[in-house]
Length: 47
Image (cartoon, rainbow, N blue to C red):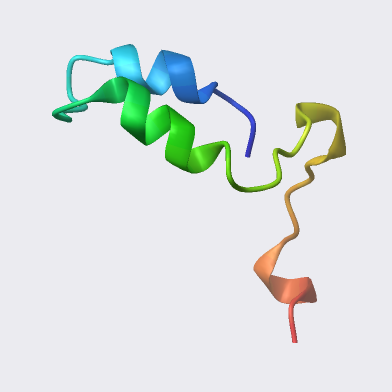
């Protein structure tokens, strides 16, 4: 939800990967959502 960037996440001590660059490049294949465009939708509003 845009609270942390992928780069920050990959640097986190609890995240383990063989190649951070490959993981980052994989996610670049998908649309990136700007934090200003995200919004939390309460479960009560989801049908």
